[in-house]
Structure formats: C-alpha cells, structure tokens
Image (cartoon, rainbow, N blue to C red):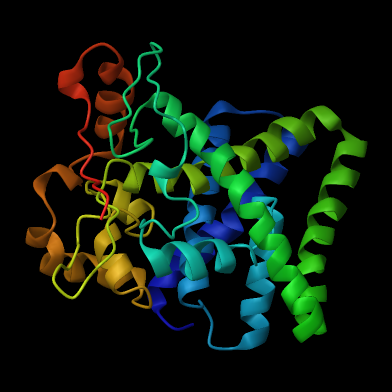
Length: 302
C-alpha cells in the first residue's frame, strides 16, 4: 500500500458487498440501505483516486482492485482514464474538455425560463444537474469505443482486459437477476445507477458556472473549480478540495487539505462552499423561486 490512509478505502471496498449480501439474505433494512448508498458514493471516489494514484505498489493487486471496483460499481474502471485523466484533467473545464458543463443546452431553469447567458449554454440549476450525467455519457461513450479500438490495434492484451470488465458486470447481473430480479433491482442495480449518477454529476457540482477559460502566458486561471468543505471531506476522501486536486493530480488524497491552503486565496470566494448539502439546497431548490439564491456564471469566452 502506498499510503496507510487507504485503509479507509479498503474498508469501504469490503463493507459494501457485506451490506448487500446481508440484506439479500435477511431482508431490506432502511439504515443498512442508506449505508449502502453512502458506500456507493465512496466507491466512486475510490475509483477516481485509484485511477490517479494506485492504492497498491504491486501491479496484480491494483488490477484486482480495478476488477473489484468494476463489480461494485457496475461499470468498467478503464473508462476513467479516457474520460477523466486524458480529457477533464488535461483541459480543466476549458473549451476542449468534452464534458464541460457549459457545452450542453441546459439553459432552462425548472420553471422553463431561459437562464443561459450570452456566453453560451452555461447553467447551474436543478435541470442542468439532473441532465448532465446523461449528456456527458452521450458525449463520452464514443471516446470509450475509440479508446478500445486503439488498444485493439496497439495492445491486444489490454483490450481483452477492458472486455473482461464488461464481462464481469454481466456475469454478476445475470445470475442475480435470475435468482431474484426484485432483490437485484433494489439492492444491486439501483444503488449502482445512483453511484454512477453521482460520479458524473459531481463534475457539474464542481464546475458549473466556474471559469472555463484556458491558461495563457498572461493569465493563470484558478477559478475553474468549486471547492466544498465540512464533513464531506473526511468521509469521502477529501473530494471537496477540487482546485488542489487539479493542480496536484498525482498527490494522495490525504495531502489535499494542506495543499488547499496554498490555493484558497487564489480562488474567488464564490467558488468556496461550506457545505455540499447547503449549496445544493440553496442553488437547486431555493434558486427555483428567487434569483438571490442562484449562482452567477464566471465563464467568459477567450
């Protein structure tokens, strides 16, 4: 293990299947189901962290962890590299970022009034948040296919490793659905879809209405991401320190609070949020009824 703090990651990875198996065997239990949904969020963050910096020093353990996360998440782990490392982290919410939040036509609020500014389809509202995972998936999946085609020609073994991940998901879903499709739907598929929603929607939470202009020699932009504080971070591996993570993508998640101190004053106050839940309630619920609760886009075209 590269860092002992990843014991927390291992605990999450081992606890989630135990919670699912217990409910499958003994019946649905609301407190455990809530724990399952929370752990599903944690698995998404672990997937993210493990892609940036591998948990283990040995290749075999890392490959096994990839496959284990694939089974728990219900989706292959290999997709994170072309979608996240080679795209989002490379272009940082700029015009070249395929899943940039201001790309999509989500410029209508939940009351049907246009909120898109002259800069394009920039939005930060409930409808945009709900649509973003679907819009991003539609854009990113062709990239996954191209990624696999590339490895089919350049590294056939890795190509088959990517296929294995899809096969593992199917080999888990089909028998469980055959045994009891209701339990499979409630205890496996719905939590996995919930986790995948958050994995993609987090991009919207962290970047909607942030400044997506690329860095230039004359201008260094640190306002491309929103940072969240509070109890979110110790429970979900410091995922809220997003600017520090972008600036130090290979840093272990446990180092992000200290790194964040350097960037805190370089990011405008509007992009610092004390609470994720408070931010979502204010922006996506109260913002429906009054403009004072809505955010203002910082994005301007170069």
